[in-house]
Length: 70
Image (cartoon, rainbow, N blue to C red; front, side, top):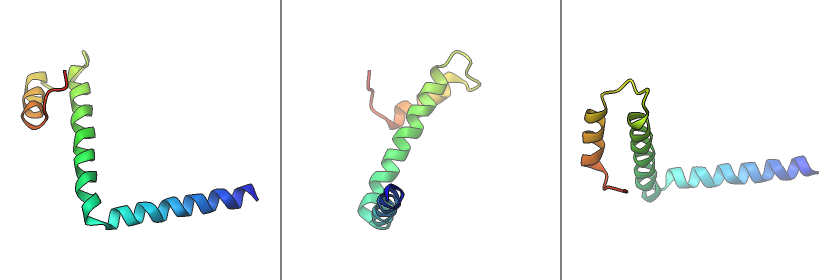
């Protein structure tokens, strides 16, 4: 019985995700969210001491696109 409930919840969640994905209004906010996540990940990578990336280039690129949070 419990397993059936879980499957219903999962399928309902999937339907909700599909509705959100198919709605153009949400696509914009999803893109913004993805961009914010990507830029924060890049900032974290660039601030790590073992970074393989040139720090100043990434910092300049992300600063131009995102407001300061410090």
